[in-house]
Image (tube, rainbow, N blue to C red; front, side, top):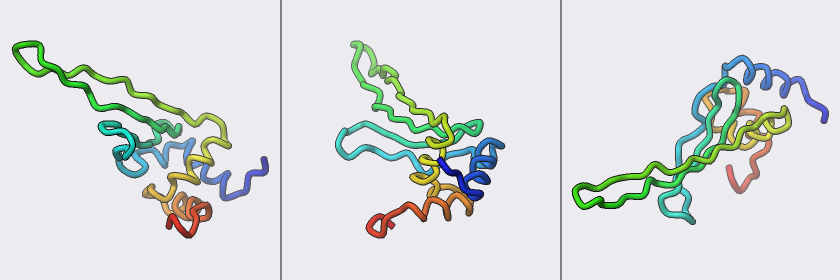
Length: 110
């Protein structure tokens, strides 16, 4: 894969931790009630997660909640990291990431 200077610069920013933080907001999945997903960057590593709402039940005295499992997908390789930036970069507080991501957004989605 040929990596452009712009992509090298973004990967360097990512590795330095300059892009760490939340990319967008946590949202709920329309198809599955009580399922939430989001994306963030921690330590230069992009992560996408999905989590179900904690199920509630009564034990006879009070309402209880059981923590649900949270599935996370990490983006390890440079290609995966660039894919993450293409998809979610427009949600970040970094102008370079936004510009890069907007190159890959279709006219219908913008």
